[in-house]
Image 1: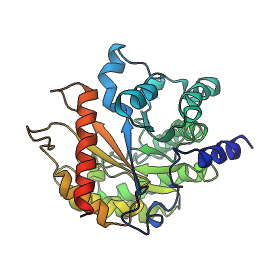
Image 2 (image 1 turned 45 degrees about the vertical axis):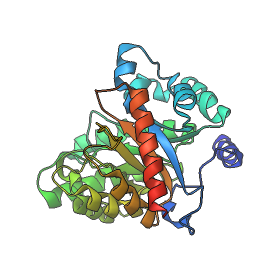
Image 3 (image 1 turned 180 degrees about the horizontal axis):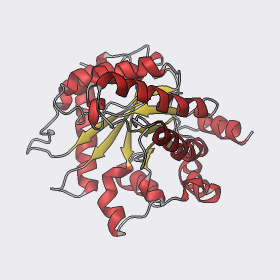
Length: 300
């Protein structure tokens, strides 16, 4: 009953997203719908501030709203400090977000054990390790957790291993409303065709992909994002450096956002700024402005 009432509340708030959990691409029948896209922020953007004590995990959502004008919040698992299974602790985060009209979107989970590990016992440990994050995401009202599949090795065997590990976690999460999404993040997962093969092999409605602008390695990032979009509950707009015209130096945001705009995707486009030349507030604001300009250009 608590989960239902929480999700009902989220759906009634003015800041709520469209329901993204299982069919994010079916919502935006009108590509010019002003509610089609929302800009989010990923906590990893502030990893150095959190590590130095300049920003606390609990104060992060408030900073995002006050300094960036962003109310769609993504998390990174490490700043939880192991308290993700503490219902009271997570409940306080719910008060500071949902209680303030914000939307919790996703948790990046960098776990010790890999869901696509070669060893069956290691995969089982990984599934058990991730279960608490499913429960945490459900309490927060998130749409998904992001997991890694970067063990590498033989391509076909790695696909099988990912299907066993991620599939088992999807089965655990099936009644939670939380998707399990794989990000291109090392190993075979940087290959978009491997990701599509893995999703096909996993064959669960609550499995998905999290395309990241900068994480496809030697593979074409524009092709990678395009292929992943039909399976994405969110998109990671990673930025590292800007030129003097405000353009990101590694990704052509105008090209990338045009591809997203022309697709059937609707939902959150999340800022993940990892640059060192400016502070994370300035970097995030530059990224936000670039996303908005690129979407405006795509609509013409």
